[in-house]
Image 1 (cartoon, rainbow over the protein chains, first blue to last red):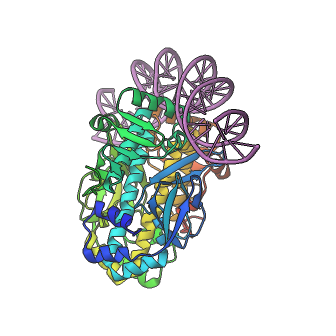
Image 2: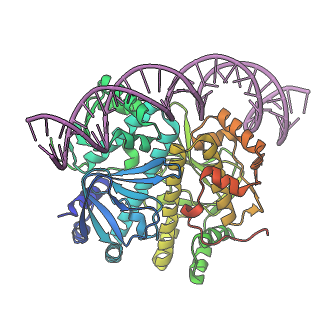
Image 3: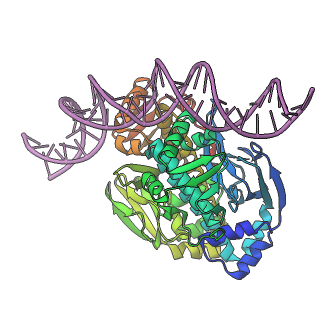
Length: 243
Length: 243
DNA sequence: CGTCTAATTGAAGCATCTCAACATGCGTGG
DNA sequence: CCACGCATGTTGAGATGCTTCAATTAGACG
């Protein structure tokens, strides 16, 4: 079932009662396939559904008048990047697919009605929203006070950790289908500098990153370089998949 | 009454029913005075109360191992910077006073009990939390994709707009008691560069900024330089004060 | 007055950017 | 199966926005 992804995500940040798990599983919506570059919604839209990522990778971004772009999040299966629509009418950023992806569009009223039946689930969605805000804060630290080397490694640590939490890694490897250009726009750096720094990272033996496949060879080293501490992600368990 | 500040803030982002206004007014808490540099809470704390800023200025920040600091928000009267404590146990950043300030510490259970009596107020608090996240996103754009000149002017535009919304401006002047060092740590720049860029801003006649008093001489120009568009703040009304 | 914090200025360095060219891989149509 | 086109990745070289270090000035306060 599509909502398995959502349940995995919820389970990774708190223990979920069986009744709530069952209620989540009943959430219905329209499933849509997306190609890289396709947008689910753009800045200013007034959505009547929330997006649940099922497969692939989505990203939120803002465009500036002079063509500059800033990515605000990378959203993996189980994430609901436009949950804000539950309480705010219009979107302040755009949401698009970075890779071949599937999403489920869940009508907002469907979610609100779940909240009425389970105040616990309402509470858990609030937690999810606040954890997302904590990720924003960590990204601000990244953008404001870390070097290019640290920024990249920190992002890779975060994505790896989040992928593990929903069981989408395979050992120390995971799929991260983002281009260097997109990484640059997430980290506030130029494409060229991303390329050079990634080369160093590869040359130093910390990672491999080829055609969207990330392999971490030295996790401890990576964490130390970047000052990564997963506590802000509030993960309590990790969904098992391989080994 | 202390909660007037909160009601002003709420009124600036949506219309507030009289019953809800009355209920907000009954919120009780401990009032505390703070000196600049004093912390209300630090990273890792598990608060049992939420902080409502009454006067002065607070700021959230994270410290890195090597002594670097990143400010995540500047919080003005009416703001509740640690509202996340409603749903998350521990804080992922510290909260401190930047100026002589007063805050009211409202027990979390007090707020939860208000939510039980008014689902509308629960909804409005969710909106407040989500608007805060929108401010984070705009700060990310600032940190990632704007020049020093743009970053500073954008911050000043935002603070001015938010102060106006709760009636704390006096014409085109408002109190913004932050040092250049703090501004640097909010904008991801060095103190020295902040100083030089501020000098230019003053020399160009856009603003005055002296001893924590900001005066804007050319609002339109400031907005154009920085690409500031207040829409992300979701203000529907402005509390009147002077003219 | 001395002391402390914040603001200011100069000078040198460097992390990162921009411009520009080239390489690689991959899908597509002939 | 090859030729082409396009997106992505790679590399070089020069420019610059911002940083760092270091010193001085200005204001606030007892």
